[in-house]
Image (cartoon, rainbow, N blue to C red):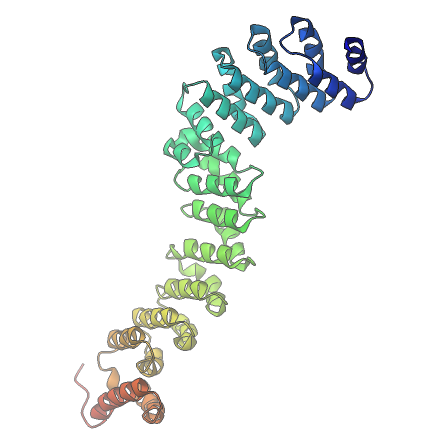
Length: 380
């Protein structure tokens, strides 16, 4: 049997060599040399088998063999070596395992962090601690480290699992460091829309021209969550130059996007913006209609009076109240305006509406308008 196994170790078939390695007794001193030979095999699965065999021993030679294996070009071998060292409980592995926290492969980083945790390792620097936290999935702990955690979080943006990339982007929102800018810009093109959303929010404080250009392009993103996140971030800027990009959003299929666009445009005191907002007083969503009424009051354009008078018969009380307040802001004597008188003609038809609240609201508005027709408008 021993001769047969030795023959298999020399086989040209890597599967045979792997099986031969797996049948060796790692506790037998006579097999150590064969296992070391396995660590240098051209086949990754053979090398992995040798690493796992060494991990079953807790002698100095086995520790040395696994420490050497952490430099293997294969991520699978490095990961197996890290796991093995964590099980052997030898503190001499601390330094090599800590170096794996910067490995290019997330599986290796995670295995190294798990091994270090098992060994009771303590980080010597804030950056090392951040690398350790991120490798264990504690990305927000790395964010608390501030600039010391940036490199670890930026590396995590390349993780092969989307929720890990998303978590890294979310954590970077809490860290203001220029090193995160380019990686986050790249994350705006991530295949997972939730990662794009997190990257958008993380870049929200950056008013750089390149960032703004890329965000404006995302207003055309096919995913409504991405479009909404972009609109929300850009809407925080009081910049009239952005108005042309928000106007098309008034017709978006998402009420949240329309609402965000209305709230932004309401801060742009431009009569043309008021004209664009008027149709949305008939929006199917009441929150949008209320926001439009408030925006029109802020803009203060007399062109909105007629539509706002009609909005005082809206089915939602909050919309009616917002319309009345907006009218008062536009013109304290709005009942005497031509726009209000034009609205009265259309309100007459609402007096016979089947819905009681419409009849009641229309009658109340008409009473104000009729009273104004028979009186002289106040001076000034």
